[in-house]
Length: 317
Image (cartoon, rainbow, N blue to C red):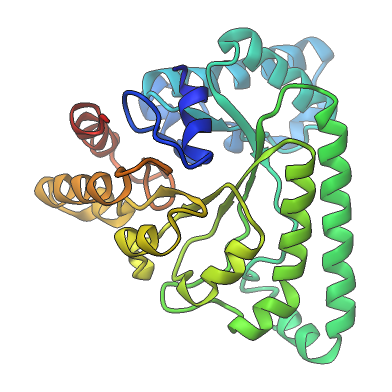
């Protein structure tokens, strides 16, 4: 099976042959690993100043870097990180480069969430005020955001390049969701359901990401019927074995290796946690191995490589 085929098997709640699939939302250590600038760190304000020949080289370089990361670290899919300033046509051309470089080896996704996430500090009070004072206006905005996302998905469907979308609006802190379950079902769930349903009707795979303690809203997340849930955050006290027991026959599970231990734990703690995730997630399939967030700036590359070494030797069906 190709990496993409194995990933799809897991998303369909099957047990792929060979190694359990591996996926990370992001790999930010491109400078340490390859001496190359990550796409998110490129100066978006320069894009409009570039000649078309410069843009052509830039689109190709970003595509090549995504494929280079996937090959070195044996990712089974990639979430394509679009540099700021790019238009849809720039994205299409660069995704074509990805397929030219790697064929159909990898599951290829883009960001595609339209639901409200936890507001940033500067926006928190304004959002809370709208919940209290203008709930219908907030719902109308939520509906418009979903409309725009689905319209974009339809345009991209014609490209024949994408396998799906990762929905990366975060809903939860480590202790609880930002919104109570009742409020979540009022302001998020109906729009998440419509978004996922629309994407699935277009033939896309849908991975829903949120950090933190998802347990109070787990049923609401599953009501939307995404193919997979990411990241199953142990820092939010999400127990992979328990979630697998509860809903592993309904949704693929992705992640759960503790990022905090990768950054600050001992080698022995990392080894134990990686083995725990493999032990709890692998049985019966429907699981994709990975961290509880991403490979972020500040994490030691050697720790990620330690994690992958155990996966290669022990993550085999």
